[in-house]
Length: 422
Image (tube, rainbow, N blue to C red):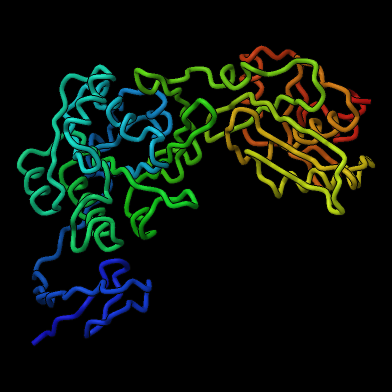
C-alpha cells in the first residue's frame, strides 16, 4: 500500500514525514500531506501516429488581439490554443492592456478577476469605453476549469496566475506551477487563447518556477520607458523574440504609438555635442534613437562609467577602442552614456553611435543633425556589418535623415571620426 508523503507548498520539496523548516526554501510550517497517487493502467492500444499531411493547417490560423502593437510582438496575432505569460511591475498597465484587447478583439473573452473586485474592474472598463465583458470571480482551479470546459471561450484572461488556488496556498511555487500546467492543457484541448498575468520579482523576471515560462508558448514583459510603455517578447514559439510594441499611457487607457522613432526623437536637442542618432534593430523593428554621452573631469582616482539603456560591457569595449586606437584621453574623465527616452536596447549596431557620441562630447564638436549612424565596432577599430542594414537605412529615411554612416561607406572608426569630428 502506498504511503502518504509531505510536500512544501512553497517550493514542492517532498519528504516522507513533516518537517518544521523546509530544507529546500527555508520556509517554516509549509509542509502539507500529499495523498498517494494511484497507479494508472497502461492502455493496450497506443495513440495512432500522425503524419504532417494529416495535420489541419486551420489549427494555426491566427486572429488579431485588436491592437496592432500587440499583434506585432506576438508575431501576427494569437494562435488558437496559445498560452501567453504577461509580466510587469505593479501599476505598469497589465490589466489595462487586457481590457484594451477585450474591447477591440471582437471575440468572446472571459476575464478571471483575481486581483481586483468586479466593481473595480467595471470602473476601469468604463473609463476605457468597454461596455460588455464576462467576469469570473472563481479562483479555485477545479471549479474554474469545470466552468470553462462547459463552454470554452475564444480567449481567456487570467489576472493573475498568483491568485489561483491549486494544490497549495495562492502564490506559492507549487500552486503557480500546477495552475499554469492546467491552463496549458485546457488551451491545447479547446483551442482557447489564454493570457496569464504574472507578478515580477525585484530582478524584473516573472515570479515563480522557471518551469512556468517553459510551459507557456510566449512570455511578454510590459515595461516603463519614460512616458511610454514597452511590450517586449522574451520568448515566442510563434514569432520573433525581442520584438517591441510601444504604447503611451493616457487617461483613456493605452494608446498605440504608430511611429516610435518620431516619438523618441521628439525632444532631441540640435547642435549639441555628445548626441548621435543610431539606427537600432529590436526584433524585426528598426528604430531611430538618440544616444547621448557626457564626459566630465573626475575627482576620484578611478573614473566612473555610467550606462543607461545599453549593454554596459559593450560600451566599456567601445571606450577602450577609443583610447587605444584613436588616442582619445579618457583616463581622467567620468563618462556617462544614455539611450534617450528610457528605452533599453541591446544591439551591437549601436556601437558606432556610442563611439561618435563619446568622441563628440570629449572634443566639444557636434555631429551633423541630419546624420544617422549604424555599425558594430571591432577591437581593431574597424566598423563591422550588422543584421538588417537595409531595414535600418529605410527607417532612417522615413525619420527624416539624409546622411548615413554605416559599414558600407566607411572603412573604420578613425575614418568616421576624421570625416565628421576632426
